[in-house]
Length: 169
Image 1 (cartoon, helix red, strand yellow):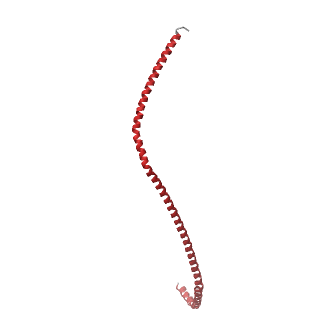
Image 2: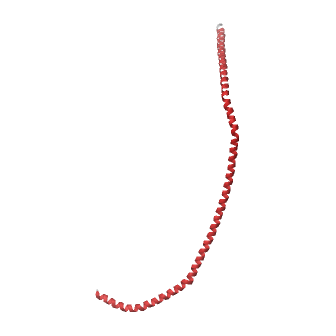
Image 3: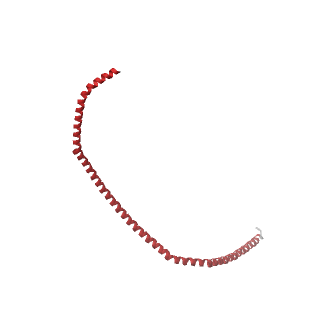
């Protein structure tokens, strides 16, 4: 290898290191400028946000008792509503039970009345209907006897009429 290659290599490496150092320096300066700009932006943002944050904090502090009051009122309303619903449930249960008992009582009364009507009907049949049947049987017997008596006379007349009709044809 020739002697001149090594010094050339050292020169090229030195130049590249110097250029790299210049690039790093420029980057350092740019980062410092960006850092300063970011610090300005952050400071400006803090100045703008701090009043908003303090107002929000004041609103939250003012609203916290109201919110707590609303929550306790809601809990109270829930408790009262629950007790009213339980009371209403008891009342409805009692009313339904009373109604059931009244229906059972009405059923017993109706059953007793129907049994009494059936007994009365049976007694009427036995006390009134049997004599009516006996009287009816007596009247039928008399009618049958009269019909029988009339029937002999009619048969004699019916035979003559039948002969007259046969002649007429």
